[in-house]
Length: 206
Image (cartoon, rainbow, N blue to C red; front, top):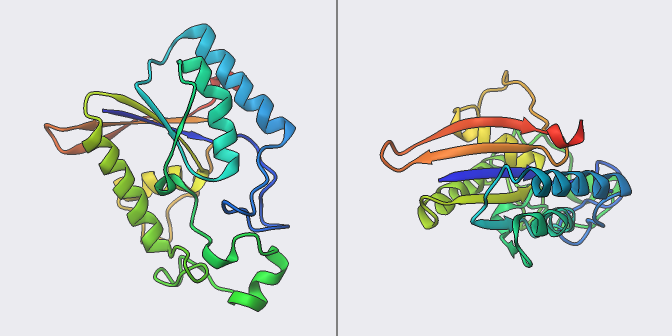
């Protein structure tokens, strides 16, 4: 099974303004749409990927990205899966970052790995458990297929941490994939093992 993780295009969400969960996210910037169109055009013109299934997180910036690139792969609709979302922000979704410390406190998710971002949200550990779980579920449900999952930088970085046992190591390098970059994993049923085939392929932006 091949699992291709695609980071969404450049988006309005960040560490200012509304916290960009499913409610607070306002989608892609013009640059982000251009990045997604470039990926669409590359996939369509080169036919370098044959994809059996495409799925996206339930956050608008990922949904919009998937909607732009899906036709190049022969898909009219894209399934949505909450397990592919960035860290679940829970009750903080849509709250302005400036108001977050007052309402929910200020803390380091890595330093307090079991404390949730906000009520009904993820902790550092639960987020990584979720990412590991969705990878294993897709591998079990779609053996011998190629699945493209449009998701987030945090999900891609978490996939590397969980597979290379770097969740609790504070010295691990910071990983920030490029907007619309592709990271490819392969799962061997025989070995019961994941193999990283490529990281952050962004040739379509050259």
